[in-house]
Length: 537
Image (tube, rainbow, N blue to C red):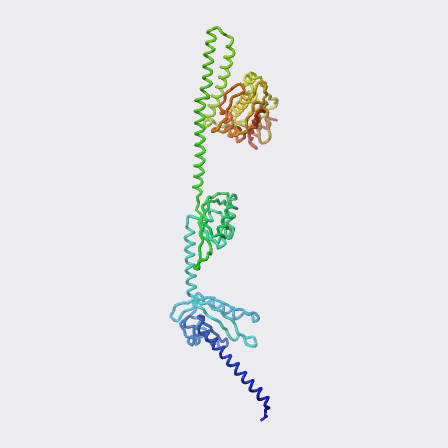
């Protein structure tokens, strides 16, 4: 026996004390770990892959599956596999095969949720996490993991899933558009009615895709107001329009409310879109009817005004001067006969013009004038009008310039055009002083015929220009020789030009005369256009 020195003995004693200290520390650590495993709701286990049996199961196994740790550890793996739910067996088997075949150099953890039978025969949902222990040679030695009972969680999920399915079934049959969004306001779901109104597919509507279905005039306003309302958690309720890919407009009233989780936090919004297109169309029709009714009332008032005043006044003058004429003749005073006769003639002509306009206007308002366009020579028509009013022009020494030697063919309603130019040229004579001038011009392009009547008359103020073509605010004034007018002629001109889808404009300044411009569009690529080309050639 080798005798040790005191120093060697001391080192041996220190070593043994150190070992004892580490052992005590390990025992304390193990005891704490055991205590932790006992108090945990999860079940921890270790399965020896060589014996294919459990070499450790924590006591909480009895709380999860009703087996004590000793009972469950004695169950062969094959028996454990038998109590897995039939619908989950293949999935569990594939899961463990993938785990066992996982590459050695990749340290990974696996998780799986499945159903397993409790000792009382009921199935429990469990979540299992597993990892691998390997020996020094890298060969798998133990499978360690934990089980957690998630049955309550799954029941809640199932309830939510069933509720969601019921919600979707309900919304799919709903007559109103229904949608949901996330907390940021981006679309997460839309029912069939909503998709019908927008013309979008569900994948096109998700996120911010729904904005593409908004009418261009509403897109910026509605999208900005929506996301502002989401950020401020304000109320949402707007009328706006959807425009689908076929061009159909759908008016809707949109509302949305936030919905919260069990903690009261906003997780999204639930919205509805109600189709109010019929209501909107009815409102528009009512508004149009109201406007039309106002026009009818204005027309009626104008009609009675003409009958009560504009017709009565000239007839009164004709009768009065006729009586004077008879009296002068009876008294053999002949020097005033010509003057009185001219006055009667002028009043008769003015009255005839008024009656003609009144008759044509009333027929137009009642729809009795049929629009019959034809191809005719507008140059010739204007010459005929000038011949008609030439006497009135000569009485005031007014020169009418219409130096056009070529035919200007037009496709239009001949009678209506005659009325238009008769009124425009007669008005120019009426409001042009003696020795004034009137110029009539024509021009034709491929798309339209343009005509202008320009006079050197008294002109019209800017404020009165706005009322020239309004039946409710007609503008009338005396001519330069006190000729009376009703304002009806210009309204009739406007009405007839509108029937041709043309336009009539006026340029005027007080003291500098007026210029009326008429433009009538011409039919392109038509039989009439071909006929026009043949005549001009």
